[in-house]
Amino acid sequence: MAVIDAVDARGRILDVTAALVLEHGVAGVAQRQIAEQVGIKAASLYHHFGSKNEIVEAVFRRGIDVMEHAWDEAAAAATAADRRTRLATHVRAHLSALFENGPYTAAHVTAFRTAPAEVRTAVVPMRDAYEARWTHLLSDLNLVDQPGLHRLTLFGAMNSSVEWFDTERGNLDELAEVITTQFWGRTP
Image (cartoon, rainbow, N blue to C red):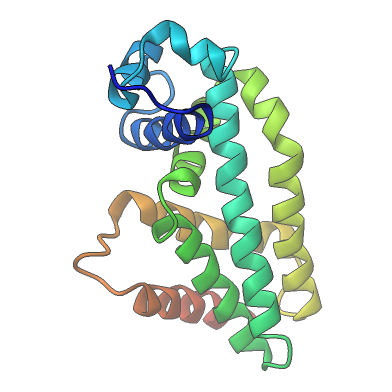
C-alpha cells in the first residue's frame, strides 16, 4: 500500500466515503471497502476517524458546508435582483451544490434519513440552520403563506433530482429554470 500523508489520507477517506455512500447508502459501505479504495489498511482508518459513523458525519457536514457556501454566493449575486430572480438564483445554487461540487451534498440528501441516529442527531442543527435560510427567503420574498411547507416541497423537487437527473444529458440551468417556474407558478 502506498504511503499517504495524514491530511491527504483524511481527505481521500472523505472523498471515497462520500462516493460510496452516494452509490450504496450508509449501510452498504464497509470500513474495509473505504480503506481499500483509499489505499490504506482498514486499521489505519482509526488514525483519522474513530468510527465509520464519524466518517459519515464528516461527509454529511461537508455536504452542508457546500450548500451553505453556494447559498452565500447566491445571496451575494442576487441581492438587488427581483423576487423571481432571487429565488431562481438560490435554486440554481442548491442544484450546483448537489451536482457540481463532488458527491458530498448528494450523499447527504440521499442517505441522511437512513444514517445511524447518532449521525443524524449530530448533523440536524446544521441542516436546520440551512433550511431556516430557505424558510426566511420564502418569507422575505413574500411568496407563500406557509413558507416551511413550501420549502419542503421545493427541497423535494431539488433534492430528488439527484436520483433521476443526468448532467451529461441535461443542463442544470434548464433544470433550475423548470423548478423555479413550477414553484413560482404555484405561489400567489
